[in-house]
Amino acid sequence: MLLCLDTSSPSVSVAVVDPEAEPGEDVRAEARSPREMKHGEQLAPMVEQVLAEAGISRFDLTAVVVGVGPGPFTGLRVGLVTARTLGEVLDLPVYGLCSLDVLAVEAVDTGVVSGPFTVATDARRKEVHTATYDETGARLSGPDVVKPADAATDGPVVGEGVVLYPESFPQGLAPHRPSAAWLGRVLAGERAEPMDPEPLYLRRPDAEVPGPPKRAS
Image 1: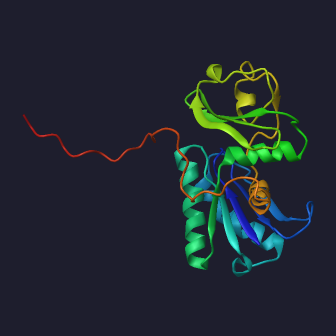
Image 2: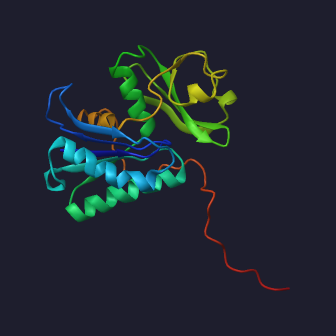
Protein backbone atom coordinates (compact mmCIF):
# COMPACT_ATOMS: atom_id res chain seq x y z
CA MET A 1 0.00 0.00 0.00
CA LEU A 2 1.20 3.48 -0.87
CA LEU A 3 0.67 6.46 1.40
CA CYS A 4 0.55 9.51 -0.87
CA LEU A 5 0.88 13.15 0.21
CA ASP A 6 0.81 16.41 -1.71
CA THR A 7 1.21 19.81 -0.04
CA SER A 8 2.41 21.80 -3.06
CA SER A 9 -0.84 23.78 -3.37
CA PRO A 10 -2.88 25.78 -0.81
CA SER A 11 -4.74 22.58 0.11
CA VAL A 12 -3.46 19.27 1.47
CA SER A 13 -4.22 16.03 -0.39
CA VAL A 14 -3.67 12.58 1.16
CA ALA A 15 -4.54 9.12 -0.18
CA VAL A 16 -3.91 5.41 0.24
CA VAL A 17 -3.38 3.68 -3.10
CA ASP A 18 -3.09 -0.04 -3.81
CA PRO A 19 -0.58 -0.30 -6.68
CA GLU A 20 -1.67 -3.86 -7.51
CA ALA A 21 -5.39 -3.15 -7.81
CA GLU A 22 -7.29 -2.59 -11.04
CA PRO A 23 -7.94 1.00 -12.15
CA GLY A 24 -11.02 2.32 -10.39
CA GLU A 25 -10.37 0.10 -7.38
CA ASP A 26 -6.85 1.27 -6.60
CA VAL A 27 -7.70 4.26 -4.38
CA ARG A 28 -8.54 2.82 -0.97
CA ALA A 29 -9.10 6.22 0.68
CA GLU A 30 -8.60 9.87 -0.22
CA ALA A 31 -9.05 13.22 1.51
CA ARG A 32 -8.47 16.88 0.73
CA SER A 33 -8.16 19.50 3.46
CA PRO A 34 -11.28 21.60 4.15
CA ARG A 35 -9.17 24.67 4.97
CA GLU A 36 -6.42 26.26 2.93
CA MET A 37 -2.94 27.28 4.06
CA LYS A 38 -3.12 25.11 7.21
CA HIS A 39 -0.77 22.35 6.12
CA GLY A 40 0.95 21.84 9.47
CA GLU A 41 -2.32 21.55 11.39
CA GLN A 42 -4.12 19.25 8.99
CA LEU A 43 -1.64 16.82 7.46
CA ALA A 44 -1.07 14.42 10.39
CA PRO A 45 -4.80 14.05 11.23
CA MET A 46 -5.54 13.47 7.55
CA VAL A 47 -2.95 10.69 7.39
CA GLU A 48 -4.66 8.96 10.31
CA GLN A 49 -8.04 9.53 8.66
CA VAL A 50 -7.17 7.89 5.34
CA LEU A 51 -5.43 4.96 7.02
CA ALA A 52 -8.56 4.34 9.09
CA GLU A 53 -10.84 4.67 6.07
CA ALA A 54 -8.64 2.25 4.12
CA GLY A 55 -8.81 -0.22 7.01
CA ILE A 56 -5.04 -0.49 7.40
CA SER A 57 -2.33 0.54 9.83
CA ARG A 58 0.98 2.26 9.18
CA PHE A 59 2.66 -1.15 9.25
CA ASP A 60 0.70 -2.24 6.15
CA LEU A 61 2.34 0.49 4.07
CA THR A 62 5.03 -0.42 1.53
CA ALA A 63 6.15 3.08 0.49
CA VAL A 64 5.45 6.80 0.86
CA VAL A 65 4.95 9.01 -2.21
CA VAL A 66 5.17 12.78 -1.90
CA GLY A 67 4.75 15.72 -4.27
CA VAL A 68 7.96 17.74 -4.39
CA GLY A 69 6.45 20.78 -6.09
CA PRO A 70 7.27 23.24 -7.38
CA GLY A 71 5.24 25.12 -4.81
CA PRO A 72 5.37 27.49 -1.85
CA PHE A 73 8.22 26.89 0.59
CA THR A 74 6.16 26.34 3.76
CA GLY A 75 3.66 23.89 2.31
CA LEU A 76 6.29 21.77 0.60
CA ARG A 77 8.39 21.62 3.75
CA VAL A 78 5.47 20.24 5.80
CA GLY A 79 4.74 17.45 3.33
CA LEU A 80 8.33 16.47 2.70
CA VAL A 81 9.35 16.44 6.36
CA THR A 82 6.30 14.30 7.17
CA ALA A 83 7.05 11.88 4.33
CA ARG A 84 10.71 11.52 5.25
CA THR A 85 9.88 11.06 8.93
CA LEU A 86 7.36 8.33 8.20
CA GLY A 87 9.83 6.64 5.89
CA GLU A 88 12.53 6.65 8.55
CA VAL A 89 10.30 5.53 11.41
CA LEU A 90 8.60 2.76 9.41
CA ASP A 91 11.69 1.85 7.37
CA LEU A 92 9.91 2.55 4.07
CA PRO A 93 11.19 3.93 0.78
CA VAL A 94 10.09 7.51 0.06
CA TYR A 95 9.56 8.60 -3.55
CA GLY A 96 9.16 12.16 -4.76
CA LEU A 97 7.24 13.20 -7.88
CA CYS A 98 7.01 16.56 -9.61
CA SER A 99 3.52 17.83 -8.85
CA LEU A 100 3.17 19.30 -12.35
CA ASP A 101 3.86 15.85 -13.84
CA VAL A 102 1.06 14.40 -11.72
CA LEU A 103 -1.40 17.00 -12.98
CA ALA A 104 -0.33 16.23 -16.54
CA VAL A 105 -0.90 12.49 -16.25
CA GLU A 106 -4.30 13.01 -14.65
CA ALA A 107 -5.30 15.33 -17.49
CA VAL A 108 -4.25 12.77 -20.12
CA ASP A 109 -5.73 9.70 -18.46
CA THR A 110 -9.08 11.36 -17.78
CA GLY A 111 -9.36 12.49 -21.40
CA VAL A 112 -9.23 16.20 -20.66
CA VAL A 113 -6.49 16.71 -23.26
CA SER A 114 -5.66 14.83 -26.45
CA GLY A 115 -2.57 16.62 -27.74
CA PRO A 116 0.33 18.70 -26.45
CA PHE A 117 -0.58 21.00 -23.55
CA THR A 118 0.74 23.13 -20.70
CA VAL A 119 0.46 22.87 -16.94
CA ALA A 120 0.42 26.19 -15.05
CA THR A 121 0.14 26.42 -11.26
CA ASP A 122 0.21 29.30 -8.82
CA ALA A 123 3.73 30.45 -7.92
CA ARG A 124 2.50 33.53 -6.02
CA ARG A 125 4.06 36.97 -6.58
CA LYS A 126 1.83 37.15 -9.69
CA GLU A 127 3.83 34.35 -11.32
CA VAL A 128 3.13 30.76 -12.39
CA HIS A 129 5.02 27.49 -12.43
CA THR A 130 4.80 26.05 -15.93
CA ALA A 131 5.84 22.98 -17.90
CA THR A 132 4.82 21.62 -21.30
CA TYR A 133 3.81 18.04 -22.10
CA ASP A 134 3.11 15.82 -25.06
CA GLU A 135 -0.10 13.88 -25.66
CA THR A 136 1.05 11.03 -23.39
CA GLY A 137 1.79 13.30 -20.42
CA ALA A 138 5.58 13.15 -20.86
CA ARG A 139 7.26 16.44 -19.98
CA LEU A 140 8.78 18.35 -22.89
CA SER A 141 10.09 21.45 -21.07
CA GLY A 142 10.20 23.06 -17.65
CA PRO A 143 9.35 23.44 -14.92
CA ASP A 144 9.94 27.19 -14.92
CA VAL A 145 8.65 30.15 -12.93
CA VAL A 146 7.49 33.04 -15.13
CA LYS A 147 4.97 35.85 -15.41
CA PRO A 148 1.64 34.62 -16.79
CA ALA A 149 1.97 36.93 -19.79
CA ASP A 150 5.29 35.29 -20.67
CA ALA A 151 3.67 31.85 -20.65
CA ALA A 152 0.45 32.93 -22.37
CA THR A 153 -0.96 30.47 -24.87
CA ASP A 154 -4.18 29.78 -26.75
CA GLY A 155 -3.56 26.05 -26.37
CA PRO A 156 -4.99 23.81 -23.63
CA VAL A 157 -3.72 24.50 -20.11
CA VAL A 158 -4.45 22.68 -16.84
CA GLY A 159 -3.65 23.79 -13.31
CA GLU A 160 -4.67 26.59 -10.99
CA GLY A 161 -3.00 29.17 -13.21
CA VAL A 162 -6.01 29.03 -15.52
CA VAL A 163 -8.30 30.14 -12.68
CA LEU A 164 -6.04 32.98 -11.59
CA TYR A 165 -4.99 34.25 -15.03
CA PRO A 166 -7.71 33.42 -17.57
CA GLU A 167 -6.57 36.24 -19.83
CA SER A 168 -3.25 34.43 -20.36
CA PHE A 169 -4.76 30.93 -20.51
CA PRO A 170 -8.15 31.22 -22.23
CA GLN A 171 -8.41 27.47 -22.89
CA GLY A 172 -8.24 26.55 -19.22
CA LEU A 173 -9.07 23.01 -18.11
CA ALA A 174 -9.22 20.95 -14.91
CA PRO A 175 -7.59 19.48 -12.88
CA HIS A 176 -6.48 22.56 -11.01
CA ARG A 177 -4.62 21.14 -8.01
CA PRO A 178 -2.55 17.95 -7.61
CA SER A 179 -4.32 14.88 -6.24
CA ALA A 180 -2.58 12.50 -3.86
CA ALA A 181 -4.46 9.60 -5.45
CA TRP A 182 -2.87 10.44 -8.79
CA LEU A 183 0.54 10.57 -7.13
CA GLY A 184 0.12 6.91 -6.33
CA ARG A 185 -1.18 6.08 -9.80
CA VAL A 186 1.69 7.89 -11.50
CA LEU A 187 4.28 6.06 -9.41
CA ALA A 188 2.61 2.65 -9.77
CA GLY A 189 2.32 3.07 -13.52
CA GLU A 190 5.85 4.46 -13.89
CA ARG A 191 4.39 7.45 -15.73
CA ALA A 192 6.96 9.96 -14.46
CA GLU A 193 10.53 9.82 -13.18
CA PRO A 194 10.71 9.44 -9.38
CA MET A 195 12.82 12.04 -7.60
CA ASP A 196 14.50 12.35 -4.23
CA PRO A 197 12.07 13.64 -1.60
CA GLU A 198 13.57 17.12 -1.68
CA PRO A 199 11.69 20.36 -2.45
CA LEU A 200 11.69 21.45 -6.07
CA TYR A 201 12.16 25.19 -5.60
CA LEU A 202 12.44 27.41 -8.64
CA ARG A 203 13.30 30.51 -6.66
CA ARG A 204 15.00 31.26 -3.37
CA PRO A 205 12.69 31.18 -0.30
CA ASP A 206 11.77 34.49 1.30
CA ALA A 207 13.16 33.41 4.66
CA GLU A 208 16.94 33.14 4.64
CA VAL A 209 19.53 32.43 7.30
CA PRO A 210 21.18 35.70 8.30
CA GLY A 211 24.78 36.10 7.19
CA PRO A 212 27.67 36.87 9.53
CA PRO A 213 27.55 40.29 11.20
CA LYS A 214 29.31 43.07 9.37
CA ARG A 215 32.47 44.46 10.86
CA ALA A 216 32.06 47.83 12.45
CA SER A 217 33.89 50.53 10.53
